[in-house]
Length: 317
Image 1 (cartoon, rainbow, N blue to C red):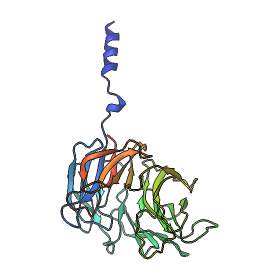
Image 2: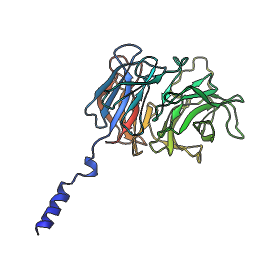
Image 3: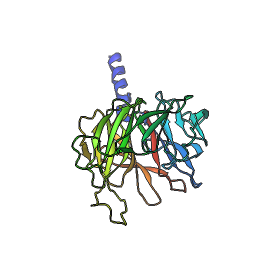
Image 4: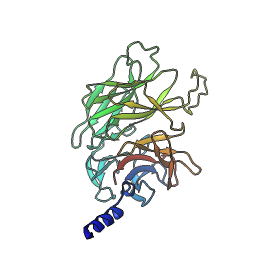
């Protein structure tokens, strides 16, 4: 009888899945100082915001950071001319390597291994391992040019790039954008999304945590066209595409056109993204289709909104 009572009490007071420790978001955001970014962390329920780095140098898209595979470090461009690491609480800032010369105005991205990637001349993907030398990973010829931002997969073993030009047989026009992935040595290139051209542009490519799919937007969005060069305005649509290239048309998901910078949750069923609000862009968490959006309270620009809040890592609780 006593044993049965103990079992009942244990079941009643056992923590439920819903009561699991909330995960932690790491994000960069514009600081009160112009042209400077900050690195913050916050629980996914909006609790316990922490300023990790007060002043980060910025590239054309803002601050740069990524969570290490083991979750024990955040790799970042935290000081001018350096690739650094900090603990998730912002302590123990350590220099890992110099930021390669000539990348000052390039968009440098970091992977979960601490490697850095960038694009030169819209033709070459360059990579640099920690304590290594920059080397050319991939070259694109035949009229194909690539976007300036390289997107490493969560395990750091593949790269996604946006390419302008025909990458598939029978293209109706060369004026189209596509997304492809490849290994770090530039081999095993896979077309994962084929755009439809007509002035559309691909933005905000992001990998799921398990590397099985990507999310991206395609369309002319809110782009102005004062010269009347675009044939027609296409509102931005959001697509999920398999990373293996088995469905290059993708599946439409119902995120609003105004969403920017999506980032997958660790379990892959939710997204964190930036949405416009009075007083500046804010961070929101919702389902993959935009359902049940939840605004994180108080998480937004810190006085200077040139760089929107952008999630760079999402750690499990």
